[in-house]
Image (cartoon, rainbow, N blue to C red):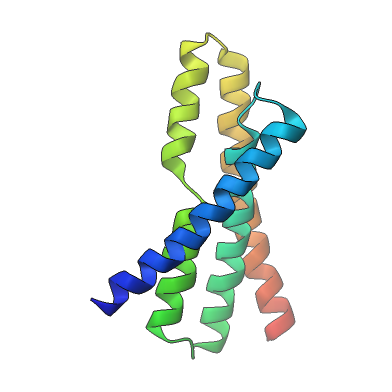
Length: 126
């Protein structure tokens, strides 16, 4: 039961950060493109790479820390369910070029950010 509470608290924190990014990005960039989801998926993937790289390099992080940071905070912060909804909305708005650009850049940049996070952690910790 303690593990669920740890994830719950972390997800609340991550969700609050995600909401802040969505609000700020809407104010800064407008609503024509899902900038908030785009940003959190890339930043979250980078953070996951850094955290996973650290846990792999050090191997001394407790399961509670892993649950709190990776499953909780990053699980609450990033979300591909919103990504999927954004895709559906762009499709329904009849914007196939923006949809394709959004999918391609989101996936490629997120995966690249994760690999960069792994590389950065391994380079500076090892």
